[in-house]
Amino acid sequence: MRTVGSTLERVRSRMQGSQGKADKCRRKFLKFFPRGFRDEKYWGWERGYKWAAHEKWLESLSKPVFAELLDRGRFEEIGSLVLRTLSVTNLIFSFENMALRDALKSKAGAQAFSEGLFQLVYGKGAMPARFDAWCDVIAGLPKKQSRVLTHPIATVFGFVARPDKQIFLKPTVTKRAAEAYGFDFNYSSRPSWQTYSSLLEFAEVLKHDLADLEPRDMIDIQSFIWVMGSDEYR
Image: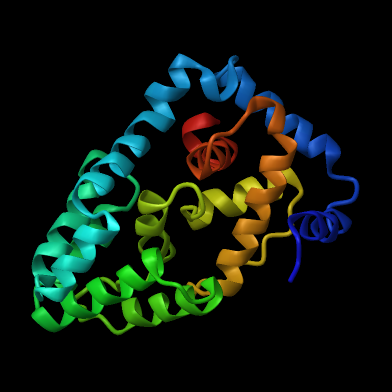
């Protein structure tokens, strides 16, 4: 099993000569938020609403509650509660939200979604297999117009439920951020563990490099990525 240290060393070997880029990204972040992750403006602009979504998840979909709803076959209710956790955010596009709502209207779709999401968030198997199985679940959901299998939909619920371990992927922003930082992001348009694990490696690099700013979880890391790659922070 690879340790965090060995992973960082391996990734660093592909980032030689990128220190100047990393420093530039750091300066950009601190220009907007001089006190880093403890900046009051940072909470208002980036962290606050994401943390609110996490708290809403804990209130309505903790492991015991989620498991009980599954046992009772309350799949439509689970889908409604899951979507409600995102109501305080703008993490996914409106067309993705609509596509997911359409997919959960049938009992079969709601059941597949609920069971797959429980395994992703609370399952005991190895994460690579759990994540790819979750992507297969999303790919198999009913769809009307827009496709349901996108990187934001594949990653947003794990991120909201477990920001200590899982991260959210917005493709365009993340690719821009990785390029700006000098990180070799292994991206593919179809969601899979291969792409997601590359993002987790990027997150480990950032946690290490930003350790003095004391990032609390993946919300802080994802927010740093957003600041680096979003048009909002040009």
